[in-house]
Amino acid sequence: MGAIKENSTNNINRQYIHECDLTYAVCKIGGRWKLLILDKLKEGKMRFSELRKSISGITERMLTLQLRELEKEGLVKRTVYAEVPPRVDYELTAIARELIPIWNVLSEWGGKHRELIQKQEESED
Image 1: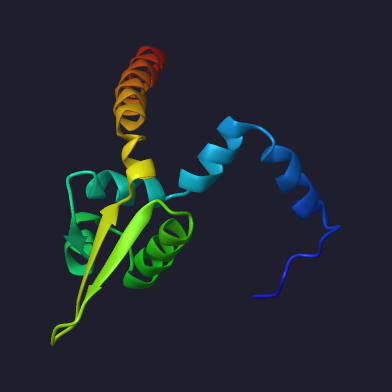
Image 2: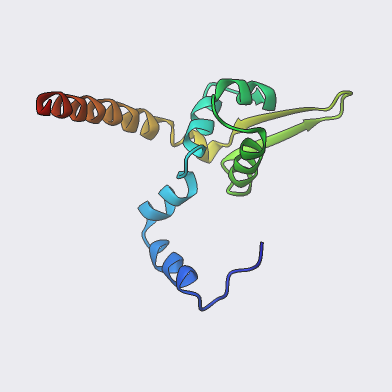
């Protein structure tokens, strides 16, 4: 994958979007899988295979890519143990743990919103 040009529209838009702290935060944890991975890790350390089994529908490649991004962003800590066979654990960093109460509130809101939409759809039928 090539580098993004400094004067590209995409890069300029990214700079403006990241001036807002809320948008910046959402960009760090946004995406299809990141929040789900982080949510699974809030219970404690997990091995790659445990994460893979706990998230239905995610491929090994996608899990690997998402974990790498989360590690790069400082939200997930990867620990490699010098054992045979090699063992790797993943866990939330301190800064990521600060998000747990926010995720809980957001999850409650999601449940309420889902119910509201379902009731609206049922009343239209």
